Every structure is written in C-alpha cells, then in structure tokens.
Amino acid sequence: MTRLHLVMLATAGSAALLLGAFAFQHIGGMAPCKMCIWQRYPHVIALLIGLVALKLQSRLLILLGALSVFATGAVGVFHVGVEQGWWQGPTTCSSGPIGGKTADELLDQILTAPLVRCDEIAWEILGISMAGWNALISFALVILWLMALRRAAPKKIFGC
View (cartoon, rainbow, N blue to C red):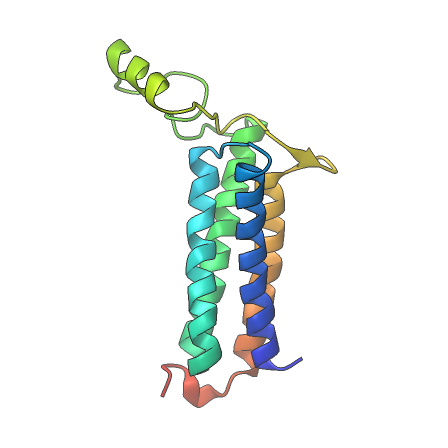
C-alpha cells in the first residue's frame, strides 16, 4: 500500500468515526457528554491534516495526523477509565461532588443543558463502550499514519 493510500485510509477513518458519532447523536438521539465532544476535536484536526497532507505530501503533516489520532485515543482511554470507575472524570459531567458551584449555579446548569454524565456508559457492543471503540480504532489509525510516515520521502519532513 502506498503512502498516499495510507493517508487516505487514515483520513477516511477519522471521517467515519466523526460521522458515526454524529449519527448516534442526531439520528440515535444520544446526546454526547463533555468527554465525547473532546474526542471529536482531534478527529476533525486529523481529517483536515489528512486532506492537506494528500496535496502537500509532507512528513510533518503525516506526523501531526498520527499525533492527533493518538490524542483522541488517549482521551478515549481516559473516558473508559471514568466509565469503569478507575478514576474520577471532570466534575462537570461525572457523579460525585461538583467543585465550586453554588446551588443556583447547579440549577442553572441543569436547566440550560441536558446533563449527560461521562461516567455512565450510554452504548456498548461486545462489552466495549463507544469511548473504548474510539480508542481502539484511533490507535489503529495511528498505525496507518505511522506506516505512511515510514513510506514518505525523508526530504519531505517540512513540506519542502
């Protein structure tokens, strides 16, 4: 498989994960929690980087694509840990004490937005939550990006 094909596949992978997330949200009616949203940003970045890397064929862009999907995979692992109760997540979307908010501020938060908790698993298949699937697939995408990096010409590290 050529470097170009690997970049296209990795870019399409991030696009597919984003489309899946939006489908669960808008078609399936599953509002995302704060950490679910956090996991989307690096995929958007990887998608944009991938589109530019297809044109510029830069090793630096390919490396940034790999780092981007690694970041979303890491957030996914953290989110799984929160879901499993291995560690506490952000106090604004997990059970437990909500740091520094008055009763009025909490009431305003509840009334203005749907409270989707990060520590509850909304959907899972084969015992793996959406956050877990995001992490696993994202780490597979990291491998694709790194394979593309390995196949890129050494002189193209900065796009020159």
